[in-house]
Image 1 (tube, helix red, strand yellow):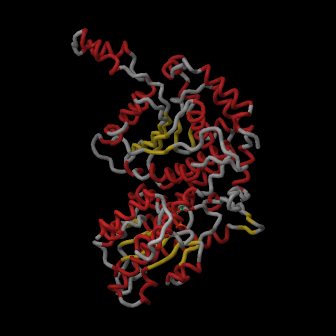
Image 2 (spheres, helix red, strand yellow):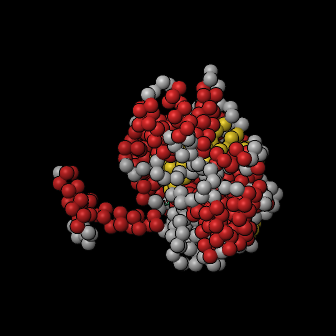
Image 3 (cartoon, rainbow, N blue to C red):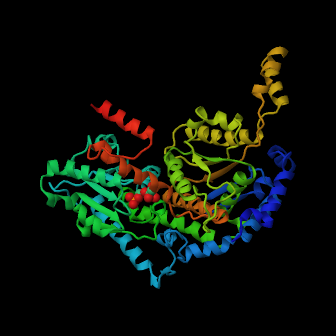
Length: 547
Ligand code: F6P
C-alpha cells in the first residue's frame, strides 16, 4: 500500500482545504437551508448530525474517494471474516463475532466460532441468574450482595463504563465495584464497607499475568481468607475471566469457575466477551443481549452502507479531515448524559491505545498525524471548566456532543435545561459572535463607547469550530451498544487509512518491563541498578523518605 498522502484523493483534499480557507460554517448554513438534512443520518433511533463540520459535498465525496483509494472496503471485509488483521501479533480481531446475532457462521482457521461464543454466553447467563436470584450462596449461606471486578485497561474500563451507563437497568440487590489501580488505596477503600461472606470477586485478565490485577487479586484473596479461613470457600467467592486457564488454576481458582474468552478478542474490544460478566450480573442476560444487538446493528450497517450513508465511516473520515487537513490535535467527547460519565475515559483507551502509533503496517514511519488525543467530561460540568479554551483558545478542538431526548430520571425542567445547553454549545462553537453582534449587545446594556471599544476584542469570537451531535431517544442497552460499536469502527476506519495496526499496544510494554527491573531496588532485594541519574536520585530519595 502506498503512503496515503501521495494518493490523488489526499492531494485533492488538500486543495479542497485551501478553497475552504475563507469559508465559514455560518455562511454554509446561511446559504443552504438544507444543510442539516444533507449532513445528518439516522440509524434506528440514533441521529448523527455532522452538519456543523467545516466541509462541503465536495469534501465528502473526496473523503469517500480516499476511503476507496486506501482500500477501506477490503479492510472491513478482512476484519469481519477473521483475517489476521493484527499483523504484529498474528491474530484476528473478531469482537464483531461476539455480538453476531445473525445465523451466519464466523469461521477462523477452519472452525466456526459461534458455538463456543454461544456456550460462554449461556454460561454467563446461567451464572448471573443464580447470583441475581440469590440461589448462589456464599460460604456462610448468605446471598451475594457485592460484585468486585478486579482488572485493568480493557478488563476494567468497558465493564465499568457500561455498568455506570446502564444503572437504571441494574438489579437493586447487587452493587458493582471496580478495582484497577495497584495503589492499595483503591482496593482498601472498596473493601472497607464490604463483608467477605457476601462478596463475589471477578478476576478479569485476558493474560492473567498483569501485575496490577494479580497483586490486587492476591490481596483480595488474603482479605477474604482472613475471615473465611478455609481455602475451599474460594470457589463460592472467586471466579476468573481469562484466556489463560493454566494461570487461573495456579492462582487457585477452580477451572469450573472460569469464563473463557479467546486471543482473537483484543483487550479494549472485550466488553462483549466474558469480560462483560459484571455487566450481565448487573443488568441481567436479556439486557446484555440488547447491548449486543445494538452493536450488531451497527456492524451490519458498517459492513454494508455506502460511505456517505455510513455513520462510523463518516465519523472516521471527518475526524481524519479535522486532524490531517484542519490541524486538530485532539477530540473532545462531551456527553450531555450523566450516565455516560465514564464514556470519555473508556474511549481514551479504545482510541489512543489503538491509534497511538507512528509506524505503518509496512514498518515505515508515518509522515502525517495519526490518533487524536481523546478527552472530555459530561456536560454541563465541562462548560464551567474547560469550554472556554474550546471557544476562544488557540487550538481547534472538534467536539462530539451526545444526548438523550428523554431522561431516565424525569424531574421538573432538568432535561430541557440540559438539552438547551447541549444545543447552545454546538451552535455557539459554530456561529461564534461577530464584532458587530458583540458591539450591539454591549450597546444594549448601555456601556460607554470607550468601554465597548476596550472590551470588543475579548467579547468577539470567531466560531467556525466543528462538532458532531449524537441524539438518541433514551440511553438504553441497545442504544449504548450502538454508540460503543460506532466508535470502535470509527477507530478502525482511521487506522485503515493511516495504515497502522489498531490492535497491538507495544508502547505499553517498555514501562511494564522497566517497572519489573526497578521493583527489586525498592523492595531492597537488589541494590545494583543501571539507571539514569534522575531515576537513581528518585529511588534514593524514596528510601530516605520511607525511613
Ligand atoms: O494496557 C495494556 C493492556 O495490555 C491492555 O491492552 C489491556 O486491556 C490491559 O493491559 C489488561 O490486560 P489483561 O486483561 O491481560 O490483564
